[in-house]
Amino acid sequence: MLTVHHLNNSRSQRILWLLEELGVEYEIKSYERDAKTNRAPAELKTIHPLGKSPVITDGDKVIAETGTIIEYILRHYGNGKFVPEEDSEAFDDYRHFMHYAEGSAMFPFLLAIYTGYLGEAAAPLTPIIMNEIKAQLDYIEYHLIGHEYFAGDELSGADFMMIFPLEAAKARGRLLGYDASIEYVNKIHKRPAYLAALEKGGDYAFGPNK
Image (cartoon, rainbow, N blue to C red; front, side, top):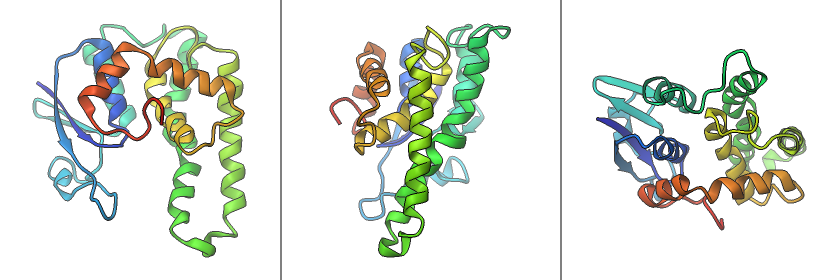
C-alpha cells in the first residue's frame, strides 16, 4: 500500500491531490508542525533522514522530494496520464515546470520567509528578494496568459508542482494584479479531486478562500 507521510500546511497536499486525480488507493499518515517553531516533527526523520514532507513509502521503497514523488507515482500508477507525449512542445514545458517550481519559483519566497526572522537586519536584502519574487511571478503570469495549464491545454504533472508556489503567493497577497495566475489557482481549487484531497488532508492554510 502506498502511504503518504503528510504534514499539515505543506507541499504534501499536492501529492494527495495527484492521487485523488488518479484514483489511486493510498493511506495517509499525518504529522503536525511544532506549535512554537512551525517545523516538521522529529518523528518524520524516522521515515527519511531529512525529516521533511512530502515523503511516501511504497512497500520497501522510501521516496522524498515532491518532484521525484510525482514522477514516481505517474510512472508506476499513472498509466500514461498527466505526462505529455515526449515529442511535443507540451512535454518540454512539462519538464521545465517540473524542475522550475522548486528550483527557481520557490527560492525567493523562502528567502522572504527566512529573512523575515531577522527584522531590520534583513533590510539590505529585502529589495533584492522582492525584485526576484516579482520576476518569477511576471514569468509565470506571462506563461499562463497563453496556456490553459502549465504544459498546454491539459493538466499534467507540472501543475501539481506549480500549484504550491502560486497558492503560497496568493495566501500572502502577492498575486494582486496577476489575473491569469489568480484565475489558474481558482480553477484548480474547484476541481473535485482537489477538494477531495483537501478533505482528507486536513488543515491547509493555502487552500480555497485563503
